[in-house]
Length: 294
Ligand code: GRG
Figure: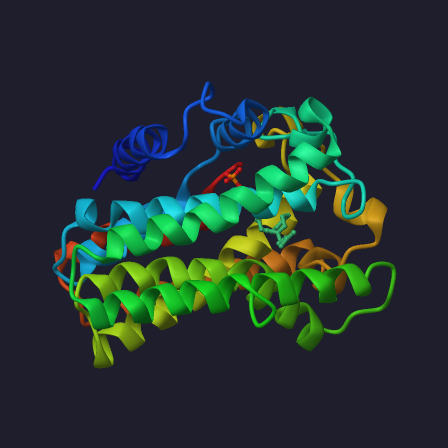
């Protein structure tokens, strides 16, 4: 299977859907809608929505049927990037190769654009979920909410901020990574699979896959911050070191971090052992996650 071709095709579907689903730039209040669209269409790999679609396909569903939920995952992700870049958090000037939302629009519009993306994501997820059975839909949306909140991404973010400049052990580092990044990736695959009708052992396997690639993804992100190319990544590198962030390279060194990223990739692929060819995109994405250069 040609991974790049698959990712590009799905990214195209996601981009078109986002364009249709998001309020237009000329829709009142324009500043807010422009800021939302600015960050959503600044680029981005769309890995979370593609995972939602690929997970639905792996359990014999149709990727297109979960498109709204897939888009909702990307909106939550984009909101988190906008807020993470704010002066009160990482205070970053560049994201996805262009000035960050607050640099382009000001702090208040950036905060509100993030808020609006997060809330719209749930409106969208519910709308999309209503196409299928009500039970799985409600369950999926509840899981996305939990993954985004204090027990998931936001919880990981606060621990990450509080541990800046402090000595962090591996257990704490894994807590940060599994919550800050892993929770949303896990929810991306689980929501796709749940809405496509999956449950029981199959869903457990998809969950193990999601948890493993979440870790592989964040370890690779840490490695790219050390040795990636700024122009490819679209933001300044070495930011983690400057801020004294808890990262795998800082705790374990680069070599061991690379070994662990590959180990989690293997665990992700093994989790799909009982699946047929329809899970091939998920297997390819697991490899892509650690081999990517941005
Ligand atoms: C709740 C404010 C708030 C933050 C949550 C997501 C996050 C925590 C912070 C963003 C900074 C960061 C490095 C997070 C780790 C997750 C991550 C690797 C984000 C980048 O995701 P990609 O590579 O980005 O998928 P693109 O631009 O391709 O979508």
